Structure formats: C-alpha cells, structure tokens
Length: 68
Image 1 (cartoon, helix red, strand yellow):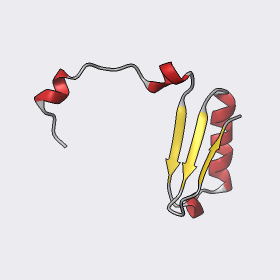
Image 2 (cartoon, one colour):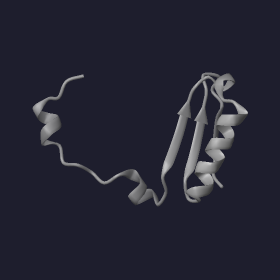
Image 3 (cartoon, rainbow, N blue to C red):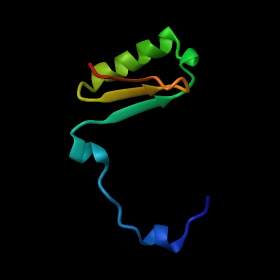
C-alpha cells in the first residue's frame, strides 16, 4: 500500500466508539482455531470493558455477538 495526496488531505474522523458508546472487538478466523484458552482471555477482556462487544465470525458463516 502506498499513501496518496488524497489520503493526506482526508480529515481525521472520531472513532466509531464515540458515537456507538462502546468499543467493538472482532475475530474473523477458522472457528476450529479458537481454543478454550482464547475464550477465557476474551472473557477477561470483556469483563474489564463491560460495554464492549465481541463479534466472532468464521469461514463457516457463523457469527456470534457477545458482551458481558
């Protein structure tokens, strides 16, 4: 990727978390690669960010949204 003048001239926008009122995390992966250990870590992250959302989507087309 390279930077063009148009990119440099673009005004920086606020992050979506400002207007949504929450931070969103995502994992787009093969669901078979998500281990119980990974789920525990995500659980700890979500527990520390109670308004956060986690979206998990795999090649199988399954999507799960969760929050604490």
